[in-house]
Length: 291
Image 1 (cartoon, one colour):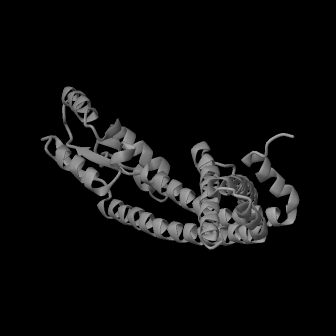
Image 2: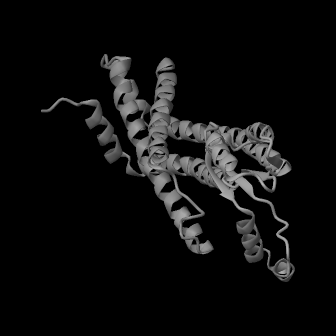
């Protein structure tokens, strides 16, 4: 007869109480699903903010008559700024052509111009880590130091508002995420506690025949970890189905709405396994102290 290992005991428990095991996995899965839904909303909101942040740019308008050599030298100096991702020099003619194409309501006015009123400019896109009001202002101040720069604009009010939204979203997301996690831990702990109580007689008999606490805990901990892992799998599956429903409902091709990355999906499994293991450890430990 083969020895009863913790793994065999855990699997035997699934066979003995299939309905209770199924309910435990479902409880863990739905608890993690609430966290998964919130996570989907959070990462898509962050994705939308990042898309908006990509529009943060600094525009430096150049004085008329600035020599080409000066423009070329300045382009190299500005491109070397640590905050700069890329730089584009827009000539006055290019600016006028763009205005005629984009500002349809003023197309007739621009068509009859004898003198181009638009100046040449440097359009500067910032690196992702510098797309905030402070960094944009620092770049703008440096650009104003060039004698041929007439004016610098970066949409200060809009960038500051974007910063406030990002900071608020981070705080609210952390608070709500922790609240969901706490509720999930409580529900999962109660579910595992029910499993332990259902096998109270078995634990008492094992204690009577001299089984150690470590021997008793082993199968329960492994069972809790397996249930947590299966619950995580269920939560990921439900989150994926919900994501597909939203994509099909909104007609999105996947460019606007995004799903968890590989690391985030694995984190769901790890979180489920850890909670299942931790809940079993607490519930079994509490029960053994009172047996």
